[in-house]
Length: 137
Image (cartoon, rainbow, N blue to C red; front, side):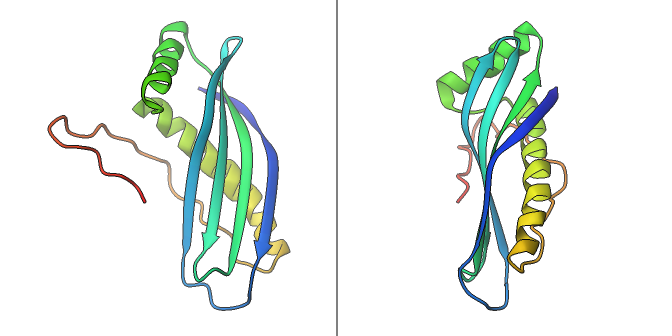
């Protein structure tokens, strides 16, 4: 369960004027570590406005309180594969999106852009065992 978080840094840069034709969102989990009884997730979320118009970058940390067994499983999966368990990934991605989109909205207005999208709650499913997982671009 996500219990809190904080924004470590945030920046917005407008490179040029022009019509915005799209927006790409990239969430990167930089680190996952144990902090006493909490899990601490360090992330970077980048919003890129298409056609090279602008970029917003939000860096932060999330804290999750989990029971011992779940905490161990999440940490083990991260150490082995740099992957989060599906249920934990849903919570983390949703929290990152919410924090980043909120902060990104303020930054966007400061440089004359429309707000970044706040996408619906993340849903993560296991890939079929007989197929290789697709790689996001």
